[in-house]
Amino acid sequence: MNSSCNKKSKQAINTNICNLFHFQEFKGKEDYLIRLLRDKTIYCSNPSNFNDPWDCKISWNTDYSNNQIGLEKLRCYLIKNTTIDQIRTIETVNFITQNQFNIKNHIENISNASHLSHEKTFRIYCLTTSPKDILMWSHYAKNHTGICLEFSTTNDVFGSAWEVNYSTDHPVFHIYDEEFDSILLLTSKSTNWNYEKEWRIIAREKSMTKETDHGSLVSNSGIINLPRDSLKSIIVGCNGDFDSVKKIVDEFSPGLPIKKAIKINGKYSIEIE
Image 1 (cartoon, rainbow, N blue to C red):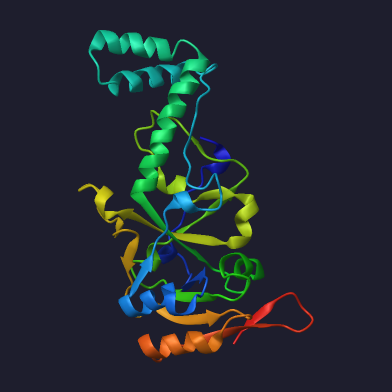
Image 2: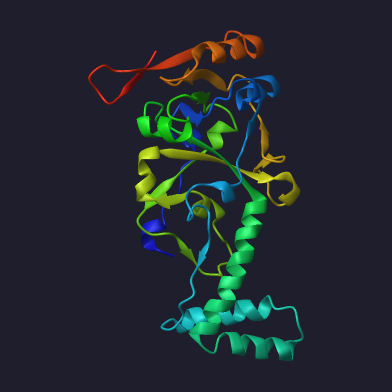
């Protein structure tokens, strides 16, 4: 694996980060905010819908031209995981590993299946430590007309959030690795995205959860229950409809603080009041 990507992520509960923030659009009566406040749930996204084509996508190493040890490990892996009789298995593996072209084609086919498996298994809720970032408001809160949710990390859900690591290289894995690091894959992004200062809640879909997945957050069709008192406030964008947000909050969660992002005169920045 690329050495520049080999950095273990931290979880929020093991840091001094007390709050994390989630940007989203605000659509009035048909809004996710109503469901969040009424049902006490959050919706975690399928990573296949993310706007970064590298995000959460597995890259398997396909070059074994100068790696005899790796080639032998690959052969052993293929023999172990090919479900035909032994003689035909050896013949198939010999064919696959006889040249780089065959190796590359075979691993790319496996890679496509891996992508589909991860898309069925994992759901992600994206957070940040930067509620004042004007690009985040533009990109994820519909040109500052949306909202930003402030959550406490002093609970099992938001405390479990993983820090995203930014690198110039996309992590590359060996297909024969016995302990594949899904967290590393799901928390790696290009340095072009480092302004987001992102953290991620990572859940496994209930339908894809195994008995051995102890301690994993579990989502049901992307839905996770919101821990009690975890939502601390709602921030309305500087171009947002404060009164409409307040009306929904007063109906479904009276007393929840509502703040407003305000443009600072003479600067490309905002304050939250």
